[in-house]
Length: 276
Image 1: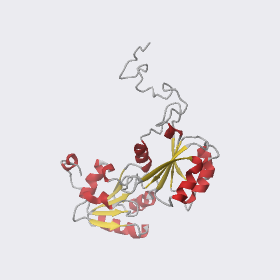
Image 2: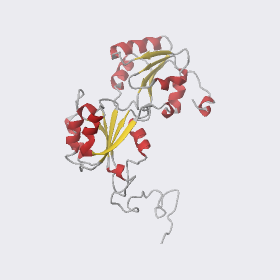
Image 3: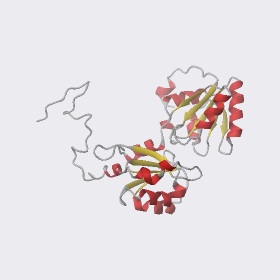
Image 4: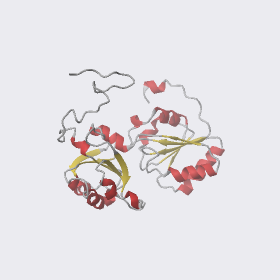
């Protein structure tokens, strides 16, 4: 915890379940609210296969820490419910942001059915942390203005309307989660619409001490995945925006510039300037 955060005055947590996004792995990427709640919680259940233990460094020394990688929902829910009914505060610590592939939907339903109060605290997702490490903006004017977060079908089926090939038709900045085990199929579907030299960032354990990021053209995505033996905690960023950091991608500088801060653009807080 930084000095600034240590000076914050924390009020006691109400009994209940706090579903907290731990971010991609780097403890410094926890939100201030997540740090405050972790520092006060009586009980912390964390997905130890996806959240590094360093994230718990702000926890109370006497907090009950429960690892959940080997547990099922049927193991976890009764424990949370019992602790809250005993007037304790419980953190359910998930990797990344709870709104993405976190399986909180069924937890929320069960907690609501049991009349257990809960709150969801967002976290930074891996795609945001990866873009920061790559020093890129995924929405470049005149090039790409849409970000798609998705996965390929595996054990969890993707609805037919969201098949990867149909999403690839947009040629947006596409962030592909949970797909390393099916990378050949993913590459084949992406190549139906993206050019073969579209840049891809293959991001392994973003935010962890052993983080690795490789940049390859799309037609080498599967080969590098197999070469590095990546099967989990791997995120793929497929985007023409990845070329902009090192190349102009065929755009004039003026065309690639956002109008938001252009002197020619007037808005509520600033009049247009004459640049002629």
